Image (tube, rainbow, N blue to C red):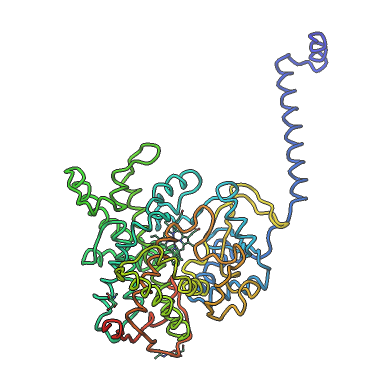
Length: 505
Ligand code: HEM
Ligand SMILES: *[C@@H]1O[C@H](CO)[C@@H](O)[C@H](O)[C@H]1NC(C)=O
Ligand SMILES: *[C@@H]1O[C@H](CO)[C@@H](O)[C@H](O)[C@H]1NC(C)=O
């Protein structure tokens, strides 16, 4: 061995160590050539990118998309146009990000089922700053699981039987304070008060009053921020949204300080010991760490927000459709009368609600589901691929975003016959899986699903029992605005009449 080394080195007239260097360099060169050759080969055989076009650099379809998102028809038609041009799987660009829209049920399923492995939760950075970089919905993977488990005890099915009495009391008080004696009212404004007060109650034990109003005022400018151009400069709506966020956080800071003092003095009133704020302040996470203020604020703020606008918009639109469809009103009334009659004949207090009552509101729930099909508060969100993907014969590069979306399937006659018609009777049967997604799916499926279902049904229960209502503009048929949540132009302006019969007997 040594001789041949020596022989060779004399041929090339090289010192032995130089010779080793040369061999190593050669080996690396060969490896490098092999590797780039392989990747060249792979590239040539690589599947095509999904169809579609990215438009202008960075801007892409941002402006067109933001404009379309202002009305229900706009979003629906934007989707329809893209699908007609490119098919249901297409790429587009939004605020700089390359995105693949997966609008079919199989595509949505693919996203949800691979969450945490080949894709992760993702928010464009301007959205994540606005929503809260530490809040449950902006987390991915293990961190998300940990945060979600921490909050889940307030939102799982079992928790609902603990919350229902508080929500019911709140509902009755709401009607007494805000509906009784009125002839005309803006339904969305009233329902905003209801939704916000029940979530404030659950999260912070905060009752209706000046402080609650002050927090609530900031939510509208804040939530609009996600649908603005991300320009943080005075005068722009994104700037206003960040400012609103700051104000809400200051108010939450005050509440946290006050509660910390009560905890330190062991003086927390019993009613407050069970709210979300108290838990976040006193119970460490599974790794034994107490939460930082920024974590607590991000999560409280998001819970207040998600418990508020989404449910309010849905309830207001439900009230709109009930007023438009007298046969629906009649059928709902019947369902709730049956529940009350049952309580009366059992000698139970008819103003106390149970989870069995909620389960009995099947038709009413169908009416709400139908409203959410036509006007889902959330149409879709993004995930980010963490590996290169092959899907349906296309190549999706690592780092691109995937968009799950309900706008294609909610209006697809294949899944919902006569899709533009408001028809609660279609909910007598279940739609095919992954065609109906107002609450999302997968690991981030709406945490407040049970809570919003229960609180919306309780609201309708008291409403139909005690009031009849009609639209002031009975011919209203659009536009259905999204700002960013669905509403009518007049925020569902209604004339109301208190039903005397139910008090007389
Ligand atoms: C009609 C009412 C509601 C609708 C349509 C709705 C819709 C949604 C949707 C679509 C998602 C998933 C987002 C995604 O996958 O990117 C979601 C997540 C979430 N929702 Fe709701 N929501 C409603 C009510 C509520 C309420 C009342 C609460 C709380 C009190 C709530 C709390 C949450 C939370 C915390 C998440 C994040 C879950 C996670 O990231 O693991 N939602 N919601
Ligand atoms: C009532 O609704 C119709 C149909 O959407 C609309 O054309 C009309 O302007 C509305 N009237 C008022 C007074 O808002
Ligand atoms: C509705 O009317 C019934 C019967 O008078 C009454 O017991 C109940 O408190 C009323 N509920 C609301 C929310 O006004």
